Structure formats: structure tokens, C-alpha cells
Length: 102
Image (cartoon, rainbow, N blue to C red):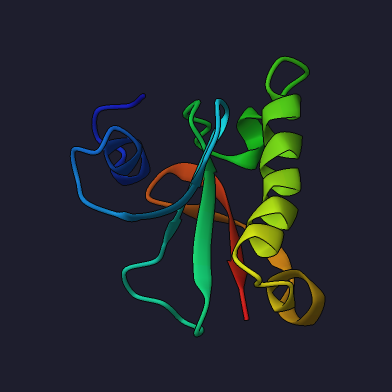
């Protein structure tokens, strides 16, 4: 966890967020300023600042986050998140994450 990272603070519950999914490697929550009706951010619990920081040791965490998007869509009956608009990588607040939106 990085001290000045907004996403790390949300994961640590130092800042409130609306959690929709959590497992041992990732945390998903609703965006506080959604750009779509369903705008969910999926971030790794391990602080990865950018795609440039992905390497052999942490690539599986990024893949896990990608797979979690499908689980979130299924569990929340939000299949349209993956089918219509999909998911995309984003870099916000110095933290790598995935956004699922429609």
C-alpha cells in the first residue's frame, strides 16, 4: 500500500467506498463520479502504479483482476458490463486498475 494513493486508502477503508467485490488479490468498488450507469473500478490490492511496473512477478495479479471483472458481472447480474462496453485499463491516482462500465 502506498500512503498517497487514493485507491490504496479505499482498499484500507481509510476513505469510504462502495465495495462490490473483494478477494485476496483485488478490490472492486463503484466510481464516486461515474461516467456510465454502471462504473466499477477493479484494482489490485498490491500497489502497481502503471503498466510499466508489470513484470513476471506481478503479471498474474493483473490477470486475476481481469478475470474478476467477469465474476463481478455475473454476481451483480451486470453481464452488459463485459458484453456491451467491456473493460479497459486505466491509470488513475497513480494506481493501475480496470474499469468495467456500460
